[in-house]
Structure formats: structure tokens, C-alpha cells
Length: 225
Image (cartoon, rainbow, N blue to C red):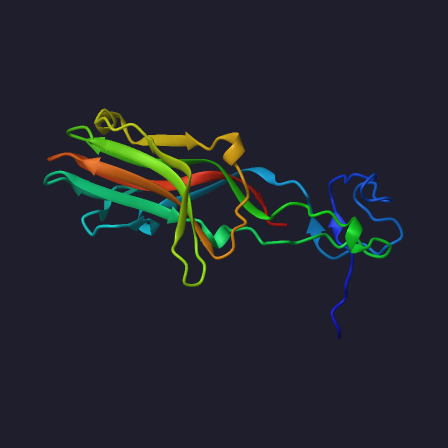
């Protein structure tokens, strides 16, 4: 049986001045079906990656069960030490160039680009615990790397490395949940092809200090349909 091409069901209200005949959910005079589509994203998603799934740049950070439901990457520093932990958002990059199918009577000139699908990062966070002595520094950054064939890597900070709490005060009260907002002008959907987006936490430790890294993540707007 050949594939059937049905108009998409649009469940938000589109501008009839741009798309004559569209009044909301339905395109008059067409069979409803196809994909369920929205031109607006959901606005309260979260990506949270735990210690066992984090990328890390050193075997010194050891996955440890501290107690029931308490797992982290642990280290007691033997000197001045720097560690990076990150999550990669590449699998969630938006699809490119998708348009709605409005069905009979609506040609391509009347099909607006509904905006990219995928995710938009609104803030990002690290969950960690500091003990014994303060960290020297602690930072969080959001960046992207765009790849092209035989071209030098283009790396861009969406939000440059930003200081987060580094004191050992959390050792007695519990971990920090440190959140860095993304400025409104930098809150954009991920549309770069062959690119990787990452949230990276960097911890610079002092001798005898302890560190537990529980996870890294971000809050997102998302539109996958």
C-alpha cells in the first residue's frame, strides 16, 4: 500500500491573514490526520544527567555509593587539581527546515516555517558538594562546537564560564544546586548541523579538599511533536 499524505492537524491558532481559511485546529475542507503539530514549544522541560553518565576528563573522579540513593563522582585532592565534567546535548539538536503540511488549497508559499523543533536551553546547572577546604574556583559554561569537513573547529560559548559557589560550607548541609541562567537574547533553538552542544562544569581543587559531583543538566523549552 502506498504511503498516504494527509494534512497535519495544527492544534494552535495560526494567523488567518498569513494562511487564509485557517481558523484554529482544522484546515476547512480537508481530511484531518497526518502529524499532530504545534508552532509553539513546551516551556518547562529538564535534562538531568547523573554521575554515572557524565563525561569526565580524569579517572581520579570515582563513581561512589555514599549511601542509599546517594551516588556521586568523588575525589580527595592530593594537590592543585582541575577536573571537568560535562553533558553533550547533540542527540537533542533540532530538526532543520521542517514545515507544516496544510493540505489541499495551500501551496508552499503559504506555509510558514513554524520555527525549529528540538530544544532551547533556558538555564543550566551543576549539583556538587565541597568539603574540608574551599575549591580554588568552580565554573559552569554552555557552548557549542560546529564541525565542517577539513575546517578548523568552530567553538562558541553561548554562556561563558560563570563562577558558581566554591566554599566548603556545603559539606555539613548538603550539595549545592547551582543554576546559571541563559540571557533571553541567547535562548535559541539548536539548529546547527553537524554540531555538538555541551554544558560543562569545571572544578579546581586545593590540597586535601573533597569533591562530590552528583550531576549536570539544563532546563529547556522543547518542541518535538
